[in-house]
Length: 296
Image (cartoon, rainbow, N blue to C red; front, side, top):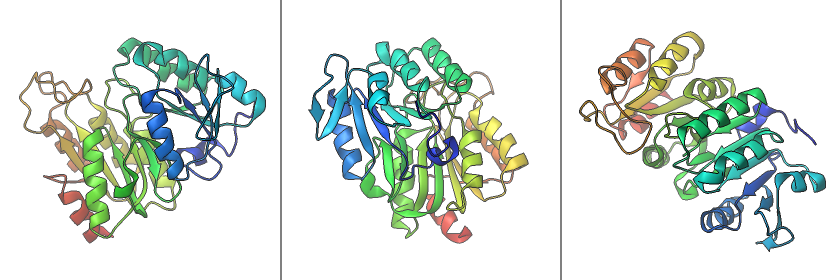
């Protein structure tokens, strides 16, 4: 087994060495998005679907398990389109053998997500998600479900906790004549693998990224932790937006990651923390692109 093809650091920003297996390739979602990832020149080398080993999908060989794949070829990344009840097993299979796994599946039970995140750290495998739109490096490839046409190669790194707003901001950045180095959704669930801080550090180290757009939302303390991290470690300009600012306390917004208790997790507390870390906080998502234009 080739555990460190190209090194983990390169893999976060997809490159030509990324060799990906699609877990759940024959399912409705898996097959649809595999096609669009391949149209974007992503290096999809195999798929898994238990009981369907030996078949092909769009010229991609299908195996029963990742173990079967690794016996025949080198792979270092996976993307998971497996229904929630079986997603943990799929994630563990990927984590035990690969450098990167992107978990698209939503509604994974929180205790499963906690075990997945923990096992990822233990095995030194980067886990993006669950409940993420994935990752795209424009002009290189995508492991995810993002609509490729709204992206354009450029030097703005986007990291987001909200799926739909990611698309809105990316699209506006493109319309402003700018582009993205990489865009990554960390996932909207209460427990996810990679957090804001890890992705921000990757952007800080990435020579192709000049500025960073961060899209957070109410609930939890991920944005407050990110603000602390930015203040101490990030030198590149960061522009942020917090979704769900109008939500009353106790109200769930959009998905599981967003619930407010007392003052913790409110838009105000997040915006204040980010501003004090020197981050420019946009009042509307549409302002991110115009602020970036002034910065770059």
